[in-house]
Amino acid sequence: MNNRSTKVYLPNISFWKNKTNFNSSWEIIYVKRPKIRLLQLFLRFFEILFNSITISKCKNLIVLGDFPIRINTNQIVLLHNPHIVKKSNGINFFSIHKFLFKLNHKYATHCIVQTEIMKDKLIMEYPFFNNKVSALLMPASNIFIKDLPPIFNKNEINLFYPASFYNHKNHILICKILNSPNFYKINEVKFHLTITLNNWVTISDTSNIENNRINFIGIIDDMEVKEYYQKTGILFFPSIDETLGLPLIEAMKMGTFIVCSDLPYARTLCGSQAIYFDPNNANSAIEAIIILKSKINNKIFPDWSIALSQFPKNWDDFIKNFIQVLK
Image (cartoon, helix red, strand yellow):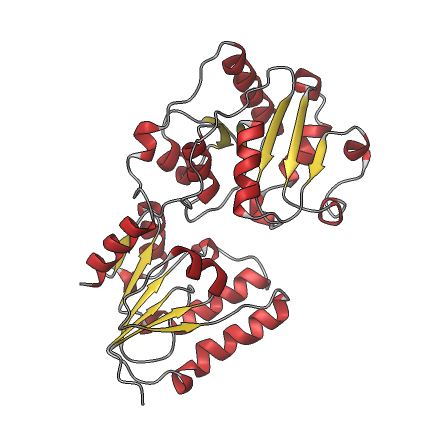
């Protein structure tokens, strides 16, 4: 039997191998997730109910995958899933996630979330976590450094939105903007989206594609994301539900404009320098883009120094903060 006192359960091998240097005395348990959702759910059920069989006893268990494991030990869980504290309507992928979390949440000795807002939501939804949860802000990847100035083009407004195609990412708002009778006020706008044409046609027709208002980028890596921040100079972020909102941190580090949802998660991260809109109102978003155009024309650029000062500078600093919580 393995006698290591601390085991770390990592559900995404490629992400964490690139970003962390763990203590050599810790045992790392890597789990590679399939892309097919049904298979994901099957594996999650196995993890929730039976992983105690496959994981030998240890003094400390650190789970970086949202779900406590059914094992009685000192268990620290990093929680990044906003749907675990969200009210669910009907049965869907995310409501099943919440159900799985509820099954095992009392096996967690302590939980670590990304913001104070998420901490308050977690305690409200699960009073068990009162005095058992800490908030640790995460840094963006170290590649997001403003080594070149962003390009601010007043003649063509390019809005970059790096987000997967989930309902809470609110791509439907972009459809509403493009179809709004007030769109003529911002008719030089083009959206650059990390989704596919097949995703788009499930929520809208193809007229906006024919008018060259949308660039479907598809899935891209961090370096390509950085290049889009640099060449567009603008992050458009209409998401209606985030535990953190990592693109907001990336964009701040890159020195871009941010036009985003007027919601607590964004206000907490971006402070007074972002341009906010109602994520359920296309006309509100159009007015925000008009404000953006005015700032670009008048060379009033954002200063993210105060907002960024609240974050750890890099992943090494985050890990130091994380170790302090463990102690």
